[in-house]
Amino acid sequence: MRLLRLASVAATTLLAAFAQTPAATKADKKSAFDKATMEAYVRYLMPWDKRIDIKIADPEPAPMPGYKTVKVTGSYQKVSVDEIFYVSSDGQKIVRGAVYDVAQTPFADELKKLHTDLSPSLGTPGAKVVMVLFTDFECPFCKEEAKVLRDNLLKTYPSEVRLYFKEFPLENIHPWAKPAAIAGRCIYRQNAPAFWDYHDYVFENQTAINDAVKVTAQPDLTQFRTKVLEWAATKNLDTVQLGACMDRRATEAEVDRTVAEGRNLRVTSTPSLYINGRPVPGNFPWEQIKTLIDLELDRAKTTGEEAEKCCQISLPVPGKH
Image (cartoon, rainbow, N blue to C red; front, side, top):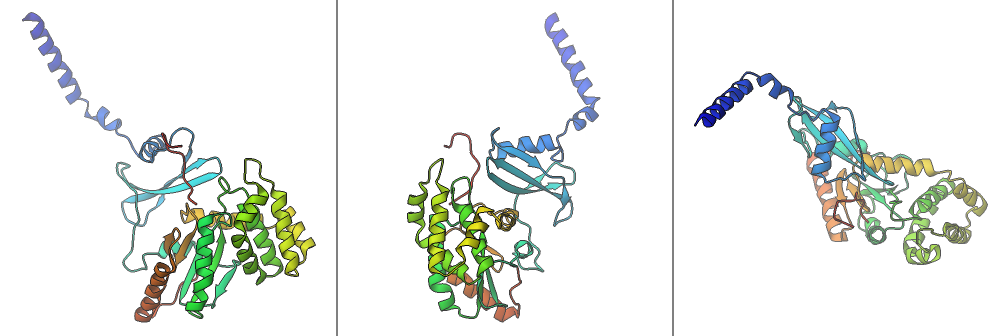
């Protein structure tokens, strides 16, 4: 009984001590503005293990009051993925999702980030529907989408649509995708209309190029160069100039800019299409693409608005190989 009384007294003393130190409990409260806390939370949420390098950006203004925007970038080898979180001013709540302003198009943020200058394009300048396609020359799904668009787009909409081409080579899984993007930009510099002939040639001969390059850990990229120059000779392009441009990787900075633009839009797969800013990731049949184009044309009629100018990447997850 004496031991029980002693234990009761001790328990009462401990409870009193806790009751007298609420400030200590408050001080231990975690905050998402602490980068180590945010990193640990995001690693568990995604989940991203220790192989993935995580960078937490400094807080920026958010589109709604009472919150800050925090960008978290996960990187593994040549792959980077950006995730946007909204953190409450007290650092206690994290929101992951999209924020919309009813006074604007729901795709206003995407339109601000899309830049069509100096990009290969098809269709009518100033068209009501502007489409931007992020794609990869080595991606088989991109090959299918390219054929769908080339076969149907201008035939169905001769003056209502403008399509812009954006390179987004997935270097970690497609070894000749970036050299192909660089070569395409070299051709575009030399002869802009010839770019679309090159576009069609590469996609139509994707399998033959894979066989020639021997897509392995050490692909033979000289075979890719040879095939492009052989094709260019049939189109009366200056093969000496083109070869020099490819060898110097003279257009690599242009390709890198489109990749950065895609990452800023959180593009993680190819093909990724934007129709007046609306994200349409993945390879879709023409009927579905046409439905979205018609939706934009109908909206333009009712609102009087013109279009504003404007293969999967994933980070490793524990247990998946």
